[in-house]
Length: 58
Length: 255
Image (tube, rainbow over all chains, first blue to last red; front, side, top):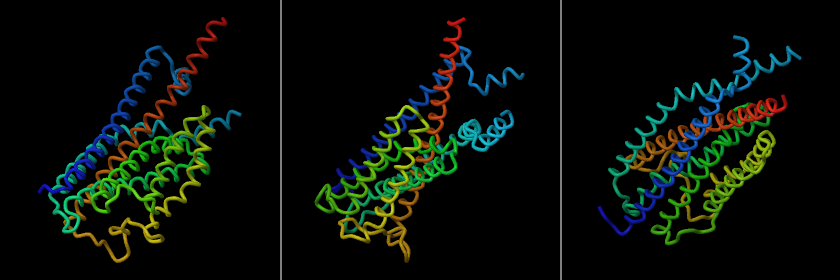
């Protein structure tokens, strides 16, 4: 049923969808950046201190 | 010295970020799947729900406005617990949790304000009034922004964590003020109708979609929070690894 208030309902849901999509997108993008940086460092042979200790032991 | 180092090593093990990363990896697909499922079901139920005899279709705004408002307070409560974790127990994940939660809480608070305003215009005849409930939620939004800014303004992560934790703890006073503002002061905003003594005053046909939507958004919150925490742990590891790499490069040049 359409009434004069449909625009307000639509605007609320649109604002929510937009903001949440932005939030999810930002977190996923951040995840991609961190994963890439991690891979890059590992490929250059950089290890975390705890990992390099484990390497020496083995 | 050696025994002290091994003892502290064991202590850190209890809240081991590596263990958290493992757990997050296993948990996240389920969390994401369940929140999608609940939100799809909740949306479908929301559009099946009848219009209100007074409010017409605008009552549909309730199905998102109430969960957003709810989560804006829950997120701050989680940050307060994390602040205690930082200050009292020095839990290594507490600061990560607080830092990851703040932007998510800010978005949910902003959405509560926006959807509330879009509901207020047709029902109250105004977008905004500076009354107790609306103002206290607006203050919560500003506090989220302040906490985010303060945390990122300091280079030293440990110092930033302590300062942010203290501000967060002090700001918690606002949460009961928001909750009880509708009872303590005159306001356009209605008092609680779901969580109240004597039971909910909402009809089942509207309460059911509301609860499913609230569950869906809560699951979405935790999905995003765990993802953001994982990002933050990785970010800190990368910073540490870069420092090690830089030190290694310096040593290489000196030789």
